[in-house]
Image 1 (cartoon, helix red, strand yellow):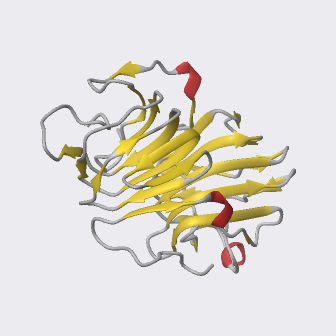
Image 2 (tube, rainbow, N blue to C red):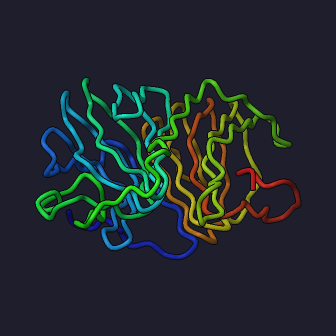
Length: 262
């Protein structure tokens, strides 16, 4: 896979239209990628994953957090089945093989490389960015590989910002990182004051429209905000989004609680 990093600068804000993303076939039969970001050296990925019916990942082990929001279909492994509307999380050490019995589409973020048991498994365009061959030892076989969270089971929490609700999905407990993965809902005509991104922040728009500064993106699109970016969020007709934040929102001209739940 050609690494997709684009020309980015500290403090940059970048929008990605789903129609402009390029689908790439992988060496795993029946699987494709549509990357926003793909960094093989760091094992980082942001974008879409697509599985045909009966496509299988093969055995692999995660070396750091990986997230998949199931838009359609589902994946099964020895733990069970994750389906549309769920976020699947794999932490470092998670070891499994997953199969799609029905066509499946996910929006995914990988934060670390993945190990496969043989070089043959990573010979070409791999499903997991940064995949390498190595010996797989599952040091905690009693720990199931997936944290599967059905988002509609989570309660919405109010914020001090009118028109904004938050669901905390994962606060990175049991990892070495201080980050947040959450869902935000913005009511129509919501506009937030500017803040400075305390860390790199990725957004996937599940539904509605999201304005970041002067740029508007729609359902199925992505935003990437680099550390130090001065950000203004808003919506005309309402928005439902997923957020991965590597640092807090530092309000630019006022004080108040962090938007991401740090």
